[in-house]
Length: 218
Image (cartoon, rainbow, N blue to C red; front, side, top):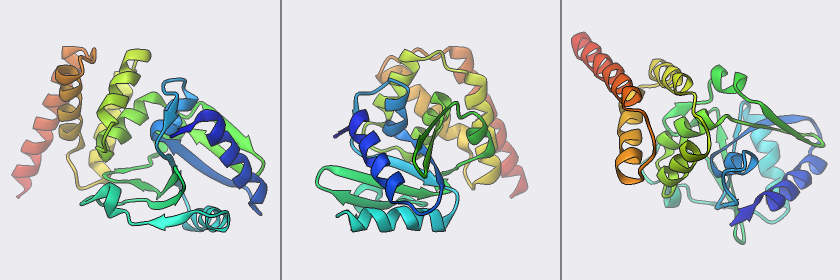
């Protein structure tokens, strides 16, 4: 497990060794630590806009002892998986634009409020609402627990979650609101997350309408 102090130290090492300024977005448990929602995480999840930027970070990590791992061990059967690099108990998951079944959207970028600079490494932390969206997409062990914790600690802007799910459906092959409804309903039923019924009803209706529209086009 990696705590926030250890994550900061790793980012400082990367920033000091980079030869140009690189921006990345931090998601998952790494982002939750910045928001004060989690004390530690199993891996550091970073998303890059450009392949060359990811390659630069990959090169540095390998030079300091990180080894590449098979993605199927963690993300079996998933698409748009990250590059996995591990050293001892510390692991980096390096995504490029897409995070399993979602894309890093302009809306996600605009909602960033926390930005940290580690020399030449610029780290942008996605919002709590967008952490929920990406955790709905990855569905790794512990994602539901993390999402429930976010809902417990923050007043979620559900309109943003719904709008982003609609956008994701427009740029991916997936009817994303259906994924989101199933995910949130499980949180409410299994983990007692406080999600307003009217929000679940709205997301379900959007998903049903999208499915009906898709069937009409066949």
